[in-house]
Length: 407
Image (cartoon, rainbow, N blue to C red; front, side, top):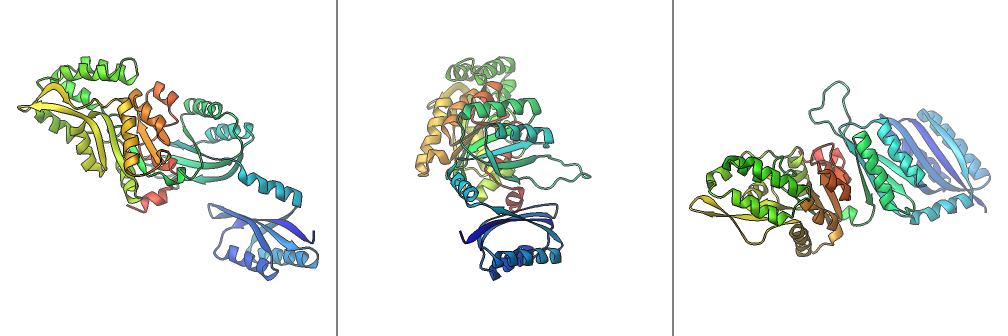
């Protein structure tokens, strides 16, 4: 072989024009760039370039000029020869499966990252890139809404995905951190529809419990609700039981509750961002259309599918209109909207907290259990429990600069 492959590693203080100056030297000798990558942490640069150059005087000369240019720029240069065998072996790795691991929390500590990366190492997976998704944190100013997220791009063959996710779930529980695991495929980069449960997801309350308090049957309804959310009793039966207990409640109460709904932290930021980037959003709820439509208008969402209360002479009759929206119906509506939008089901996201959300969480391309019950977290693809609803954006790969740009 009359050519040689050289890996150039550059480190030092970053400055404008540095990459241009180095590639200009390489261009003068007709070098072919085989790979290039750069990272910048606190204005400290780490730059790698793998290039092919003709052996002999030409390669010696280019190394000499690169060293001189590096000295001139005040940076450190290191050269490593790469054999053709090693290079070709590296090329074959590009066909390996790729995955994205997102780590979320109010703050991230070395222990959390260490445990996650140890699992990756134990599975003989390679980390191709690590990217911080949240903005820089001040050590002086206290954050009103602290959050931290990094994204790891990994590559390799995974024999047992279930075993891997179980290890991540254990780390999540032990170290109070969220760890999301996704295949890095074309669908992940082209999500188009996000569907949300309403109660205890978009809002920080269960509306039916609020209605029950006003009707004086709070304890009875809460007990039924909790049992249904934990999957202990059939949702449809629990729904009918709770509806009967609300008979006679004034319609004026519904309006008062609607205008005072406690919207979940991060929900507005999430919806504004999704809308700006062309996503469609839907509420799929076992709650009521009266409140779903109010939230739809407040948050600028596109669809609402929920249960309709029967109201006569200004009071609730204790009955409902149409079919009961349970877990199976939510999953059905998600598929229906995807079909209407002419998108693949893998391009959909579902977010919810209860047992009746598992159907849509598991049918969606990305299912996220949000501050969910233990049984739901254990059976969902991914979960967010450490930060607000806008944590969904980090699972989509958005950086804070993509989000805050819209403010």
